[in-house]
Length: 130
View 1 (cartoon, rainbow, N blue to C red):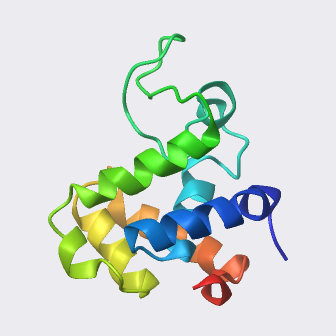
View 2 (cartoon, rainbow, N blue to C red; view 1 turned 45 degrees about the horizontal axis):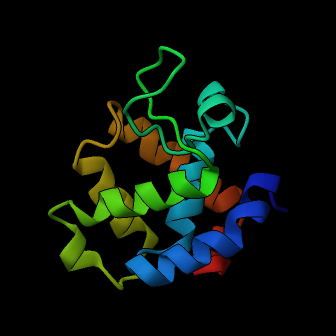
């Protein structure tokens, strides 16, 4: 059971996970939740699969990317600037990463955000990707 967004981005996300030292499962689950499974306005119009705030040309508060891959890379780079990054880099524990990202203010509703991330992690059996 796999979503096409997860299938289409797994190989690219694998490379980023290896490059930045964060779990593949966290990249894929967060991208899925933040992009509505690839169907959200931001993911389609802005190639933004992570809800990253920034400039665009459609009057939204979210950043526009030239490709979805650029969005994935920007997300991983964003994590490297957080205090928790150095202690978690290279750790494949999905839960530790999700809790740290939520605790650092990634979402305005961290408990609900973590619930949704974990739901996708389990629904699409992302444990197998780490």
